[in-house]
Image 1 (cartoon, chains in turn red, green):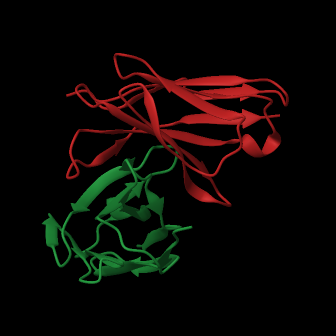
Image 2 (cartoon, chains in turn yellow, orange; image 1 turned 180 degrees about the vertical axis):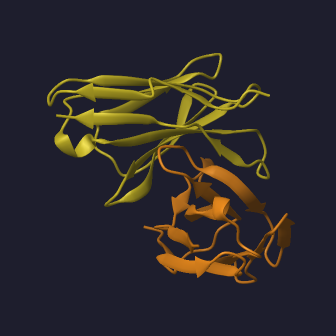
Length: 113
Length: 114
């Protein structure tokens, strides 16, 4: 079955702009979570959505937001971009049940200049 | 917040050698996951562990979920060049009304010398 699909793969934005990233989870998976990966901080949890509701949130400022649609596709948005937002943004998809594992997409590389 | 200590940070080994890396946590997790990430790609799941004491193999890879639920190790036997990459442990817990996000270790960078 198809994996987790993220778009775009690469993008460059200017400080102060906003960006929207998209994620399509594995078919049948209703949980989507987002992570930020940087060389300094490693992989950090942003938020998780299940059935269009945010279930959990990491320790990031309000400039980072997300949403999930009825088909389980998810978007995350970062407003008022800062240089430090340059990172690989990863989307992960999880099936239902505590025993289901978490699969990642290839990520969206964001560079803020 | 929860933290994972992953060691070693990097490993320089010869092809054919066995590799061992581990993670310890200050908190209990319900699931331990091990991922491998190649440059420019997302993490790829290697092994998932769901029960304390569980020992699971996937080809040349073996991982165990510690009895205390605060640690896990990953072993790779007879390393080959394609094993090069960064290996991450991740713990997954449940609290409140839903699943917590994954907490990741800082990664073990595996380098295989010819």
